[in-house]
Each structure stands twice: as structure tokens, then as C-alpha cells.
Length: 505
Picture 1: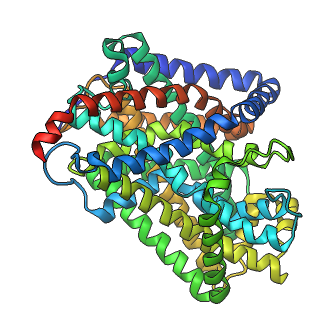
Picture 2: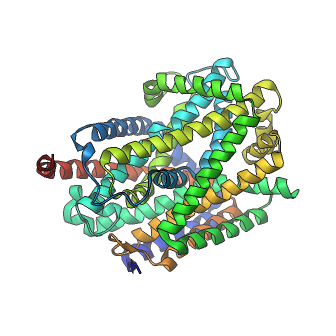
Picture 3: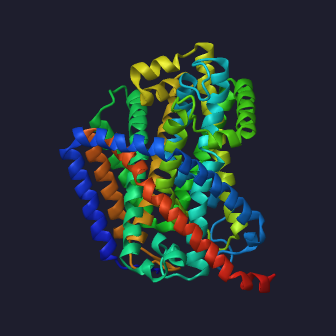
């Protein structure tokens, strides 16, 4: 029987109080809170665009250097990897993308087709060519670099430097020293908890209406708040069952099942859909993305002022940064026994390939519907909204009832794995010591899942999910500072440990 970690009251209670207070303030002052936060978001996107662009590309360069340089062979801890390559890739992809990839792979290319970058004409052939390419860019290597770097630092801190707990505060010890155990460290861990809850709120905001629309279509009932609440309750049951089984039996098995289901659904769309168009459009989109990777990485549109990079690229980098510390904590936990090179390449490879395939297949299918006139996707978005449009797109498939049912089941499990992974990390962060072989108590993990579910239900009732999404981006500003501390910590540790790796060579 595994040892259970004790509650860290200095992190747990302030985090809970802050979350409850923020929720209460959002409910009381919702009408003024939303425009206030949106103004902050606009200011972040317009004034800090260059910071997020340089940070993301800088992480890409740093990770490539770590993977293929002399530190690539450095092993995270001792022994063999705890999970096989497939289970490892499945868990990190499901935790990182969740229902968001299901939502945006269908809808996002249409937004780019209607409001393209680089001053292209709306609805033009050029806009169509770039639509899926830009989606693949946003959800590809750059996004996974934002996730991968915290993973490396946190894992190195935990497994190699033997810091006492799997927390971000301990992972910046190389930069902060003893202050990691003081008030600064506590503030960092509380910020991680807040950013995770806010970031997951975005996934809930996308996933709940989407699955609700699918169930409403299947059962012939109208989508409603009540239906969304029922969905959240069912999700909670699935999640609690998985959480009670633990990391190995619960999250691993759910993630494996989910990846198989995702592959089956993707293959189904390729086979029954316009196969030739999907494959050629995917190839063309991948080529555009690869050829213009640098341009897209640094595009800020200061002359044209169209706002595309601020509204999309900078927003995504900020959103991913807000949830990246959670991803780093979770992936680090399952990365023991792997080298830096193996860990980096698996994260960038599994994550990017999965995202590219989903955008190429589902984005390609949606674009074909728009181009052939079989479904006016843009018109559907304007009339029915994004969630209903996704179901309308799937309804054009042969055996659409089965396809939508499959899609709904996939969405259920995707969000269950996201809740499972997130609550596990929240419980670990709010515990005093989660060393190797030590896990947070099951009740603690389940409690965080229920808190997130209740928070999501309350926000569904008041219609405040947009506020949560904005909050997730706002918190990315201090997270940038944490990234700087993580970089300093890793560089100092590697330099100090250089003699060890020279002796092992």
C-alpha cells in the first residue's frame, strides 16, 4: 500500500478561499467583471505580444539544444520508464489537449477562413489554404514546447536534485534558494493552482456545450443548462471512479482507451469522407506551416494592425502558458527513467502529431463542406453558434448517428482524463510532501475534482465561462516570470552537475 501525503494547510486553505472568493465576486459583479477582465486581456495581447512570441520560440530553441546537445543523455531519475511509449504518449496528449482539440479542429479553420492573417481576402482561396495550416501551427510544436520545458525542469528537480516535493516552488529552488520554502514558494504554488483551475475552465467552457449539443441531437431534446449540469455530474462519476484507482490503473487506462477511440473516429472520417481531398489538403497545409514556421512564430502585424496574431497566436501562447505548469507537473510525474532527449522528443512528437492529424482530418473535412456547398459552415456558426455547428458538421457524415454518439463518448472520456490529471496535480501541489512512491490521499484528489465540477456548474448557471477563460490568460503574466526562474534553475543545476555527466560519459 502506497504512503499517502499530508495536507499542506498553508497552500490548501488560501487556494480554496481565493477560488471561492473569486467565484462569489464573479457572481455578484458579473456584469462589470467581464468587461474589466476583457480590457485586461486586450491590454496583455496588444502590449505583451512580442514577449510571448519570443518566449515561445526561445523555448523551442532551448529544448532542441537540450535534446541534441550533451545533456540529451541525462536521465531523469534511475531505473526504467514507468510507462510504455504508447501509454506515456496517450496520457500526455489527453491531459494536454482534451476536449479543446475536438472543438477547435473543426471550428478554428473556419474562423481563419473568414478572418485570415497577413491581410488575405476573407473567404479567398489563399485564406482557405492557410486555414488549417495556422491551426496546425497553433496546436503543434510551439504549443508543446510551452508544455515540455516545465516538465524537464520539474522532473530534474524531483528525480535528480531530490527536492522534497513535486511542486513548482521546489523546481525554482536553483534560482530562489531557501526562499522556495518560504512565502514566495507558497505564493508560486497557489498561483499554479489558480492558473490550473482557470485554464481547465476554458476546456469545460468548450467541452460542456459541445457534448451537450451532441446529446441533445441524439435524444431529440433541446440543449439547456440543465442538460449541461447533468453532463457535469456524469463526468464527475467517471472521474471519481478513475481517481479512486490511482495514477497507474485510472489515468493510464482511460488515456489508452481515449487514444484508441480518437484514432478510430479519425480513420472513420478519412474513409467515409472525401479521402483524397482530406489527404492532399493535409499535405498542403503541413507544407505551408513548415515553410512559414518562422514567419508565423514572430508575426505581430504592427503595420497592418489587423489584430490576428494578438487575437489568436498570443492568446493561445498565454492560455497554454497558464496551464503549462500543470502539464509540467503531471508529465514530470510519469517521466521517470527517461532521458532528457527521449522526454522532449516524445512530448513534442506525440503532442504535435496528434494535433496535426486532428486538424488535418476534421479541419479538412469541414473545409470541404464549406467549399462544396454541402453545408454552409460559416452560416451555421452565425445562426446556431460553434457547439451546434460542430454537431451539424458531424451530421453530414454517413451513419451520422453513430459518428455523433462516438464523438460524445470521446468527449466524455477526454474531459474525464483532463479532470483526473488536473485533480491529481492539484492534490499533489496542496500536499506537504509527494515524494517517489507517495501519492495524495484519494479523498483529497476527489475533493479537487468536485470543487472544479461545482465551480463549473455555478459558472454555467451565471454564464461566466468567458470570464474564466479570460482569467486563465490574465494569470499567464506572472507565469512568464516563473518560466524565467525555471530557466535559471535548470541552467544552474546542469552547470553544477556537469562533472557528474562528464564522469559518466
